[in-house]
Length: 462
Ligand SMILES: Nc1nc2c(ncn2[C@@H]2O[C@H](COP(=O)(O)OP(=O)(O)OP(=O)(O)O)[C@@H](O)[C@H]2O)c(=O)[nH]1
Ligand SMILES: [Mg+2]
Image (cartoon, rainbow, N blue to C red; front, side, top):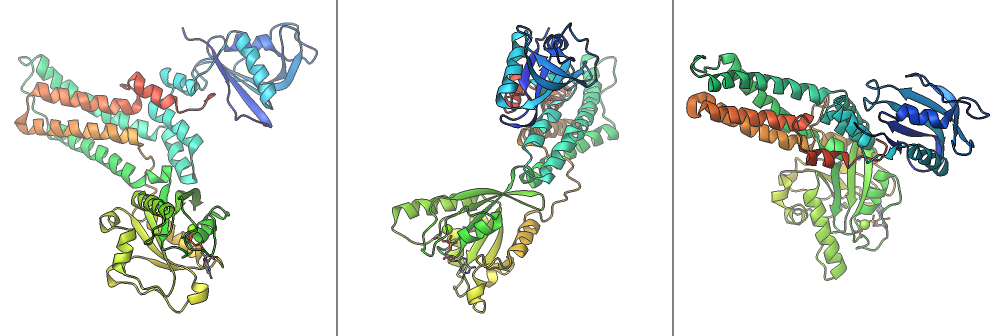
């Protein structure tokens, strides 16, 4: 039998309402020992009916002191978050009041919950699968409306249902195959029908599509990485501050002001970005600047989108540009040329090489806030070019992607078997492996180690 856990479910600090959650077989008994519907103290235990909102008071059973006026919501399992008996107490939100109520609950026999333990119980009690549990954390950590949309869709079971269907089909295929392996004399030689062969192809295609979806759209969850780079003093830090609408990076008239990369979150049209201002790249003997330039180069190479800044009047040389964004690095990232300071040198634009004519160019004045709106729009269209946002109702995470890659590997081996190159026993092992890999996504075959890694990243009370 499981024990009863409790935790403060709302953030630390002052606020309108703070919620304490209790879950487990003794949740109702514990709550009724410290709850009174009457102001002048408890006369007897309150009998709690499920799914009702009770107004009343928390009191200390030792000295009968009233501690707070609260709302209490008992939810009998399995119709609750954890599928166990749950009581939620809505108290006033202050660190001391919530902590005191929690201590009372613990003194009545509950245990302080581990991080994510409520959601873990919902998973272990099969109310949700692992993808839905992960989506709870994604909803809490969503950095943009799009990230929230994907997480909510996953929380409703979008990924779970598709993986479940795939797995069921593979289990059916395995049953046909195993019948042949176990009773080779009773069953005719295993000859998969066109439909069954097609099913393996379909499963393969579906897994590959999910992997593509991860590669194309995972940055919508974590943020598209933008690096602002270019020569010293072109206005990189001024642009950074304009984009994030804060005075974050130091701006001076002296070249070589920025040394350490300065990173900040940014949200444009519901899409999350992580933008970094870097040291101006040029030839220098200054040791600190050299280190800053190295760090700038690392950021450029790790970014999805590079804003390469220039001033009007500079001669654009391919070599200079390729020193900042090396050729081997250009294929996996998007680039925008940003021409700054058009307020003073508007008629002398940089001379651009024909080789880089296809790269979009935006003229701005970071100082006078000119062209910033257009630049933001260009950042969005360049970043999500070719991505079908409607189609991607869920974005598999990296853990899912790895499991899908294992599934693809096993299904490829099954395909080889279907062309007569492998024994049925070997094929059965491969198909079992593919079923197991899919099971780690939904949690059916996930090891304790995987579960710990997922739930330890949750906050206490969730
Ligand atoms: N006229 C004009 N001046 C600008 C503009 N943007 C930036 N500046 C000025 O250019 C100087 C350098 O600006 P920063 O933003 O510090 O340039 P940076 O590229 O970050 O420079 P480093 O960090 O030294 O590489 C400052 O004096 C800014 O006020 C602009 O659009 N027009
Ligand atoms: Mg700077």
